[in-house]
Amino acid sequence: MSAESAAKTIVSGLKGAGISLIATLPDINLSQLLHEVEEDRDVIHVPLCREEEGIGICAGAYLVGKKCAAIMQNGGFFNSNNAIVSTLLQYQIPLLLLIYYAGDIGDRTFATSGSMTEPVLQALGIRYYIMRDPDDAPELIKRAQILTEDAKRPVALLLTKEVLGRRSVLKSL
Amino acid sequence: MTLEWNALHPSDGNFRVRTLGLCSSIALGMALGLPHRKVIALDGDGSLLMNLCSLPTVARMKPKNLVHIVFDNEVYEASGSKKTATGCGTDLVGIARAAGIENSFWAESVDSFAKLVRDAVAGNAGTFIGAKVTAERVDVAPFPLDEVENKYRFIRHVEKTENIKVFSTALPASYV
Image (cartoon, rainbow over all chains, first blue to last red; front, side):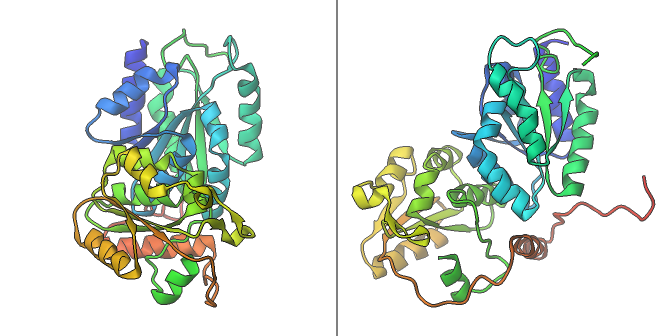
């Protein structure tokens, strides 16, 4: 699947799960996805300066009835940890985190960030799923949204290059 | 400030923020989610200094219903009263205006503060109001709710006043 089709599939999956506000901060691998979010008239797109403020924005919007998602690189997830702990976890607020998995197997950059991503998610007790096949994206997003609402905790979907249509799909990981 | 406000105006519509810096961002999320309601953020200088980047984001999103008030006492009062950067010359209203929030004002007196707030609440434009205050605490009751109860009550308040459902429908007893 091309990056463009993958991005369209992911955005339509988010809308299908009822998401109506999306906070984002760019990574080169997220370009096409963020382009689709930006172009979509049905969602409120909030471009951020720093990912942690996005956790606050999504929490505030949730409190008044919006289903939200935050899209960021794993570096941005690290940036957001205080807000995740002292707002999302402390108040039991759900949020769908779509985290670009920089430093995933085969990446030439960010190996350190890659090696810390899953351990930090585990330490925070955040359930996460690694997305590889764009065809699975809508169903995974739908299930993750049910899980975050039901558990009243954030749930993370790790976006790999495969799911973003930037590398051929690997099904064996 | 949460305690003082809640003592004066107890309401399930009060949401207490516990992450230093996040007040302006949580308020922005509320303002974007409920564009026909006024959202008032009661912020402090130490908090806003930690999340200055919320100002350009507010400027970019242009919420017409957000009134952001910063009480600037120039110290981290709750954390031992060490000086903040505003005690060394940093001008938060100047930063807000430079970030792109045109309606950014310093209150010059109690009367000017009251007028700015009244106009902002009655008006139809996002507003940033700074007020220099002295660092002193009044003796008020502690906040009566923990975070989770505060969340539920706030959401129930929104559901009731907006006639909407925030929580997902509970499943029947059987598994689906």
